[in-house]
Image (tube, rainbow, N blue to C red; front, side):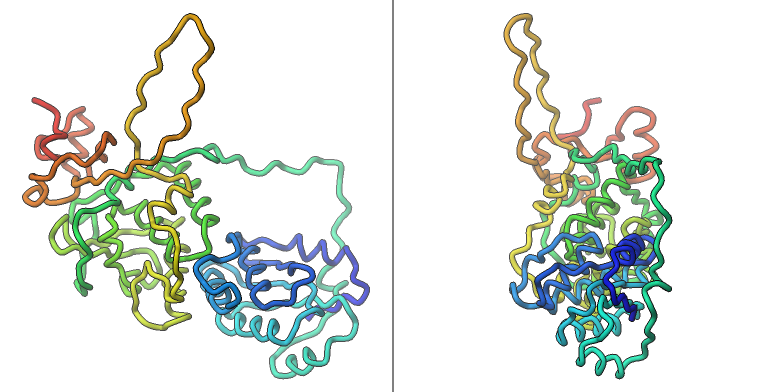
Length: 397
């Protein structure tokens, strides 16, 4: 507990300046004029960079928001949470903060801008281990600002642009979800499966968008997994909490022989917090081994995976646009409005004995890159092997 009896703006600025989620420090400035526990939970989620309010739950129920906030705190390196305006806390809001502290083990720092604490707050503090300090000791005045201009934020080369991910070409599937599997799946490389590689610039932009696209961990984790595994929706639906490695570095997706079989994929660094948050939401709320990419809190009316991908401006490569004819006279042609995203049904990852009789359902979209070492090596030579893809898509020889 930090006491700021004179409500000095210097101490408030120092607390706000300490906000650094990537370094484990979170500063929450509560919304003024609101004393609802749900609003404080939304303030914590907003400080984590998540959009609020949450959709899919009862508008007045604060429990899902607090559970999701705890999952994100555990999945990220947050260790300290500083809350301003603590003298305005109500009993139910303070109790929710203590529950968050108990769930996550976070160090809670309350900044009280009055000398005297409220009676209930003094009583509750006697029940927990705490210490009291002056703001001048822990929130000192920062050095005076110099005339140097502030550094500009890091530019994002792909900001506000559509990103075409070849891995999403195989997202839509023709088969139905199979039952749970408890096999010990081999690594994807051992089964000669190599998902499309995402360039570092694109990877950074995809991670930035997914971390800020939704507060629902299961939704962003599912799209992230599709991006780095090239899995279909039926394969994603087979993943359970136990299929995520203990340290979040691997995930196992199951398949009953329609494709390459059950495989374990390495999880890239940018996607590990997303998948850990989805697993932690289950352990916090239900404590059971449920489907990893489903909500243990029972949300409803959330967007489908393809709609969510489009809201993030992520989609599979689209059919090439027709070339515009150049005219010597007349005004310049108006730019075409963005067309609706086409989601192909690609059978490139299915076994040929099962998919050889399927029609072409690519709808003009380009075929995904090769996924086996043999096809990758032959693609480098400039041609596709005769046993890759559907017959209608093979190049004539």
